[in-house]
Length: 122
Image (cartoon, rainbow, N blue to C red):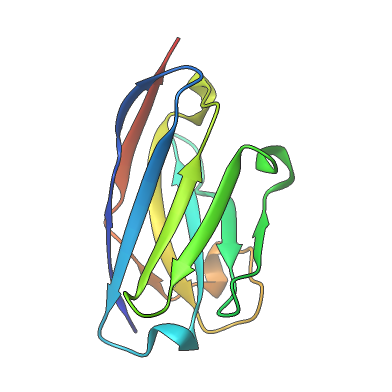
């Protein structure tokens, strides 16, 4: 497994932007598809998006267009750029790593960060 540490969360007004970072260590970063999930109290963890080792990104349908992802395979870091944020984007955001190609299910990811809080006010 790989160790993951998220950063960049915070509070922002609706319409604003945030960029989350996830630094990986411990294993070969390019062995993994990286993903982001989010969770609000009382709800299951929700898939946000993933990025392949080649840099190709894919997203939950509802988030396509507002969120983008990138990865730096030298710095072993993945980024989630969130634009035009809405109050319903408020959640704890988790970085995750998967040995699979193009996963979307929580069960397909075997390494998780501790999460970072994103709060969007109206």
